[in-house]
Length: 508
Ligand code: XMP
Image (cartoon, rainbow, N blue to C red; front, side):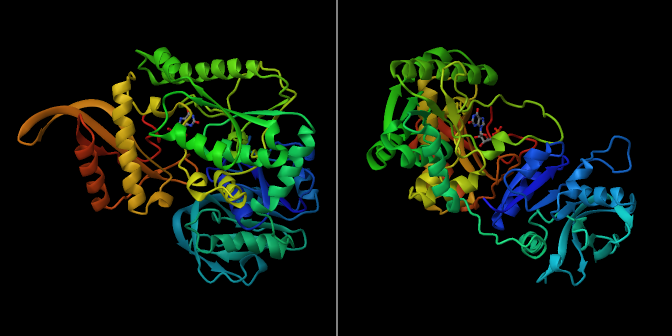
């Protein structure tokens, strides 16, 4: 890698987006805590630094800071919102609570500056209470709004830049252009990085690391573990063996589809473990969501241990960890809302020489792009995310075969109708929920007393925040009609119109 941007995290809510925007503009980028060591920031290569927004006010005691040497590494620094105010403060500028806070879409005027080259559209996304009110020496204002006279500044000789608005948010018009201007015009970069461009070097790295050793993987059929497996298979062929656990909580036909594609089409070496009965008997009677997750997580580890003990000579464990799983936040830990069970969360006490996580620097959409460049079919690469505990957290309360059966059939119909309506790619996830509620209905002139099924469909780019999807009423109507006509013991369908926050994607 010969171009790399480090984004230093000051705790703002859009910080991951900054790293994504830089990557979309063609430069590999990492989000690091503002306290990261010099070695980490320098990495193998450093082409520029971006300081993020954050919740603090720079003039408060103990406001977030970063070491002074960050500004002496000889690369351009761009501050966004708090990052801009921080640059102003340490260079002797003045920052005050603004007379009028700006929030939302705000018309802006740009000066003629390389950072804004070709920026014809001029509405930006503002979200600030403080503003820079006096420029530090050597800086000039290069953008302004009605209420913020210094909406961006530059010190070209020191290569220090700041924008008060959030260019990383799509509501800022031409937002991508600002990043590519910073990268090309200010940092002087070529911008030729893409997930596909690094496939060969990833394969080479795996080959070098594994040598003539062997690798064991847990394959869930989800995008991350699948792309990691296909990549590793390209590197070491049959010396990769995958364990696929059918825990009985998969969607209709899913186990067969996974086996058919990965074993038959790709030629992966897969052991399928039929653990359906085992999981269901352990789950019998459990209705608390956290308890169900725990049972599944532990049982998964037991099954994996047993299977791997039957094999011998495996040096490395392959995991589909992706970048959002490893990002350390600069603003400290957050509350555990749900204890996610990942297929990646495998036993620590199995002895391997090491772990291979080829995707740990990529975002989900980049993993998909990489998968496509490896020749994986788009219906697999674009599969919606599916949680480790599977349908167990979509049956509210205790789990039985009957409930799972109803859930599978309704979920299948939903997926079929979403596909028929051409909405698959527009949605982040869509699934049905077995609510457990029974209600009265009328069918064929008779009273019914049957289950209500919930339909959940959301849009998102990372599942951290989601919006409920505005599916056309005609499609919702068809989904509801088909579910009630085709699935016994369902007489009502409800659509979940809760975003996240305050809801979560899954009901449990
Ligand atoms: P929530 O429900 O927390 O879900 O808003 C966010 C995203 O994570 C998925 N999810 C899980 N994935 N193990 C997983 O691997 C889990 O235990 C788990 N719980 C939720 C969920 O489907 C959504 O994509």
